Image (cartoon, rainbow, N blue to C red; front, side, top):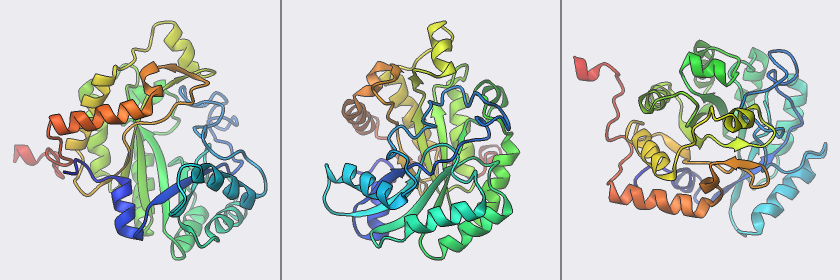
Length: 310
């Protein structure tokens, strides 16, 4: 029994083979780091701009692709690839620069899609038009870092934009036929269980095609690390996290693609939760919990939040 619609399943159906991500660094920064909004970044973001596992940046993107592919091929030999611009904000550059970068990444035959991690407030019209053009060549996915819908938490993590900005970005992307994947974080300081589920439900109704559910990692060199050491951040246990993920899945639409159930924190800089370093154990525990609790994605899904009151 499949408990949720996994990205692996969706890619197999779509492309007829296994598909692997090649994490790339486009050499960009972020308005939350370059002084436009802030110079400190989001409270949880490492110096790698969430691209800790991306291929090392170099101006030769072909070389980056080869390096990233070599890393994947240590584990697998066959399959297709997604060119994934992961580090920092990957639409935060002039259109001319982005076009050169993205077209080069899409050129190899074995690249079946382009995935771009960015912020909702970094999607000007000329960049939107470029993404729509590229989407006519190969599928283009835009990953938006929402993390939470709650204003108090968004302010605490220094996200730097309001929720209507996210809503507008999703609407504009979907109008152009682009696929949208939304990131959310479980375990943000001060949020209750129900507040985290409200974020999941909101993403489910947003029009997004996919979701990445991420555990809050406390990493060395972040402001969150200092808050953690001062006792201001309570880490989730593995059991709590599994239960939260189960509730999120139940409250998401059954057709939404689940691109991630947790995430990797680089072991060299991971402070907490320590249990998250053993990804194999985490995934095994999740799968056992899903089977035990008979989890089914969408079992509590309501497209209309007021449906139960009518």
